[in-house]
Amino acid sequence: VSAAMRRSELCELSGLSPRLDAYFELAVETARRAEYVMTLVPALREYALYLLAKAAAAPWFRPRAEELLSEAWQTASRAGMQGELERIERDADEHSISLMKAM
Image (tube, rainbow, N blue to C red):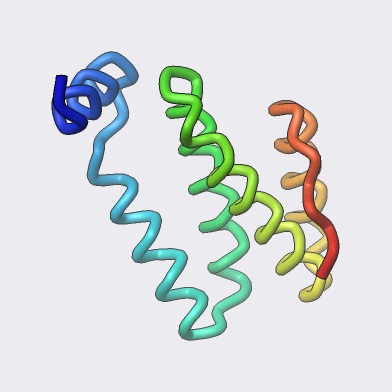
């Protein structure tokens, strides 16, 4: 079974679009380059949550999700975004993720 076939089946079973990965990657990269922290942090968090949803059927997505959620926490911490920090920590707890808080 090809990787494309597995991806197609996973997307069909989960109801998630394979195009969302590209959308999130573009959103995160654009916000990073422009240094739009107020956009970057929610984009990182939402991308991580999306990958965690995919990880239920495909566990190899989890490490990337953990990296993104940790980056979101670190960025929000530097920017003093208390509300986002609370949301990120709640999401980490719900998914049993230990955030890498070193900056």
